[in-house]
Image (spheres, rainbow, N blue to C red):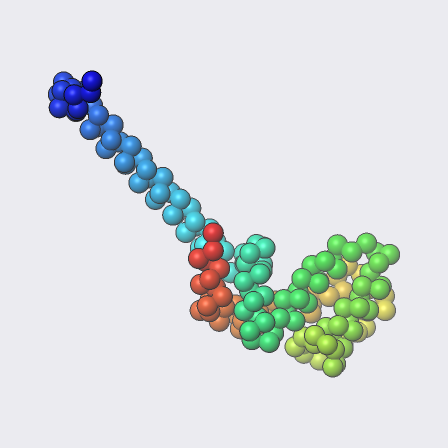
Length: 166
């Protein structure tokens, strides 16, 4: 029944070849777009610490890295401050005391590295907290992570693993 492609008129063969070339080109273009879309996502993900922290996957990879360096408390404190900022005023007192005891107080279980001035400023506000009580301390810890931990993270196995993940 089927005589094969050689029995088709040459104009049909040329059209078929042209369609195959176009389909191959389209598939290559889709693969290129997919690769570069992923690449653009990676670049945005790694532009700065803020971009990394705005992504759940980025937070997870960064947390893994910080755990390996025994400095996970910095990220935990930063995230707690983000939560605190949207805490209703009637809950701020209890939450502020809890955060102070967990992260700020000397000898705290997850004590973050703060200068004495910042630590004292937080202590002065903990009894009468506001939504910005931890802003200065959070910014201090963010700066430490941005200047110290984040550059090392970019060179780490955790970062490479995160980039390989779909």
